[in-house]
Image (cartoon, rainbow over all chains, first blue to last red; front, side, top):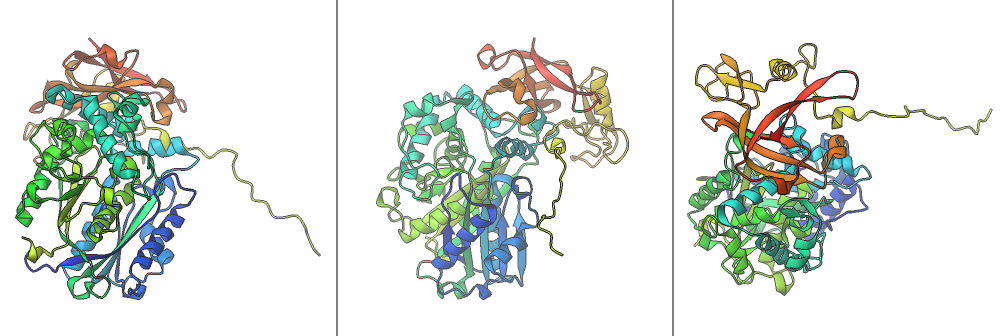
Length: 398
Length: 165
């Protein structure tokens, strides 16, 4: 970290998430317009680098080489770094991480990040079947082992070992739907009850339809700038304090080990905390990867918000609501926003920017927040990515 | 000279999507689709579920490999996976099954451990048919069983599934 420049998010723009009557490139243009409108002082000629988070455009819209296409659609000439990142569900945060690295090292001065995914089409069953390739296609996908069955087994093991209940899982959806109902960009803007979650259709026991995030279209874009340039564009820069990633040589069931412990997330969190010399108690808000309700429960534990095995109790006691120990998913999470794979990690950063600016309805505003983290996972929860965002620069961390 | 007939481009009636949706693809001993772990598939045809073990460091792999990712050794031996194992976790896929096995849904998907996992055994996923989520419990004994995959085309292919002991 020594010698690296401070990097800020100076602009953020998002599309409405959902089942959109819009093509992949429409979504890119919508998010591009939103971010350029957010930073009126920015001349797009000043953008020197572009990072595009996109998970499966080859399969869902049959387009490859998407980063130059995004550059064309947004009128950007890239003179430094252009890249498309793919790590499935975390393609978005990976794009932010590489943009941050480029600006921090001085390779780039102003970088753009675009996360996008178009998942809904009239070939829905083909789209869904393509999700099988996120795991090991030949040795797990072949058994129908896609995300819902995997996370269902995580839930089953967590219940088996720690006594976690379906009601506690449902409470995650209830909380995130409360905040999602106050997020005009979310796919689902209706509050739900525990009974409603438990009574929804069974997808893969113990997970019901409302325990799962949705198949979603959406895009989100950010502008990153070096400390030297940031104030030209905004009075409220959001500083990127750092980012970590961790994977333990695992892609196939044989390497998963114990499903109820996400060792990789614990290691990533510890890396982040020691890098920034902070502890979990210092975190005011967290956007975490609630692709399924059970995921958020494991994330409380592995991020150190509560003790191992007590994630169910943590939600039951309301500790992850605003006003509790830490505000988790005040933007409504993946459960409310939907999960357009490449856009999700970028949306999490967008939420941080809106929170720090105070640009959110008061029912979901984390008043006084100074430090936030975003956790984006990929695959069958082998790969974990965390970034820290703050209103303070790294050197000014208390 | 004017023509009011627009040019037509006639496309095939059907564009096959099999390569995208068929999950059982690499079972060829030779040619451009060949796999160097073909022995794995040949053994399935013979009624055996095997994998590779590194003779240099002793690591058991799954999936079978051609180079040991632990020690870089190439001296790998085919070993049989014990017929009976223990059910570690399971669910039943009721919604969103892959197209190619949609007709079989709902079916149970399980993770089971065979041998002394992780030191000298494997943890693998498998389908279970003619049984429901309510009929199973964590820790129960299961065994692997070889099944035949028929179609598309004439080639017969093989895979495994789990059954309750």
